[in-house]
Image 1 (cartoon, rainbow, N blue to C red):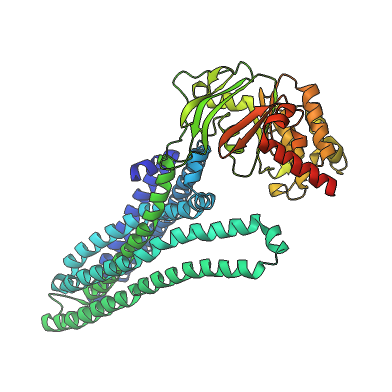
Image 2: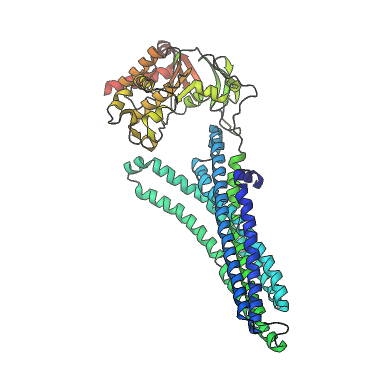
Length: 579
């Protein structure tokens, strides 16, 4: 897992390596300064000349400045390396998500993917910076300080025989107790983000039903759970400070007591004042190094869960793959369903589609009608290979869709989904999702065909009007027509409208269908609709029930023999008369 993640370091290996060398230089100099200071104190006590004192003081100042420079450079290179690593990792994760199929997306919630791209990668970034900087400096400082303490203090260094194991054990216990709480937090972040996303998307519904208080309470519960876990973890981690202080004060008392006694009893021969001051400094360095290592351990354990979550995204294999020698061009818009059965998960007990047999000639207009849950959308999602049939096969242009290059197939199939999605940007920007190279004249032609040009022309900025995120500044019907125009710009072999004119009036709906017949006669048009008026002129109408095709034929044929179609027709025409 770590090897897979570290492959994203890429071009930032150089600042990573430089950080290591800068940290080594800083640690060596910081460990030498107490040694030279101790010698200076002893020489002053022995009556050193002012020239020697000034020279040694100058050397100490230069060493301090050099150490500061090393630390500053390490801070710069570690920040550059960690930020670059996070950038590459975030780009790789996002690129990986773009390869996912609907089946893969179903496995991860959108809120979870957002958390992984933001919070989790930020945790990994911080951990990486600590590893290449603090995790290098602290062990070096610990080792150098212990060695220098034994060289300078002799038996005084015995204090560390007790403090180091005691502090190490205490810090490990603190970290071990805090980790479960930190791990729980990330799963709760997913639920919190999911609540926020759901609330923001459904803001109009929330306000329409005056449910603001309920949503606030739901958010408070989610945020409160995170706060509780973080508080528990931070309360445990707070024990680091008293542990550190106990060891520090014990070391100071031991060094000052035993050291003073040794200085007095040996008349400065076995130990002198300079060594005592050095021991205090080295003691502080040792304990601070242990403290920093404990914080690194906590951070790494926290980020271990983030690493695991990011790794899950990176190793997730797309459910659909290109064949070894894919067909790159779709010959025509003919469609065949041959013995198709489909279920969303292998473990599912019931098929969403059962025994589907259907032939559609290229250029036909096909209507699909049926009750809610009859799998109309599921049926058409198999055409551009958003899912693969569990058994049987779906053919487009006489070729099994699994033999096509996925991108080529989907470029030949334009699909306007039930949930129309516009992106922040101008109307032109949104339309050119269908064709990046489309001219202004082509944009206008597509909008006229989709009955969108008229309302776009009423905007002060026309086609340069800015669309807010999610298309919140246009109506549902306007959004649907823009999405249809966007699909038409692909000049597809097959055009699928999945209940995409539900928000437009019947007159506009009729004009859109009339435009399709006149301007794109060779394109196969599949229209999923709730209104029979939207499909009654179709060459073929497919009636679905319970995931299977109940009947198929023209309007007149179905009115003669299909009870389901007759019931729908009577209900809709009766409703029309009642009005």
